Image (cartoon, rainbow, N blue to C red; front, side, top):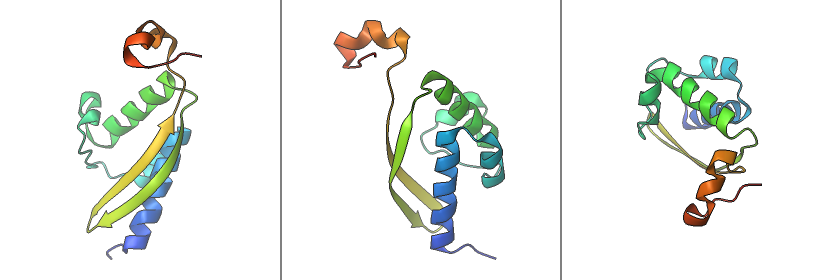
Length: 106
């Protein structure tokens, strides 16, 4: 049975909520092993669902106070695009780069 656009939007929002909270069990339930990340970022972590969870885990460890909010969820067939914004304090190691990069460290 094919999912409706509304069902795909709900799943996408659940996925992002799980990613933001670091709930790897929820992510595992929501993702196919063949998940595709068009940015290519998860490839460094082995690709697929495992790579996605590896990337999310590293991001959560690097930016533990990350706070994100969904701007929009768009569905086009099987492709779901999530636009979101997030904020976090810069990691301490980035403090030395602050003048050149615009990062500030609290």
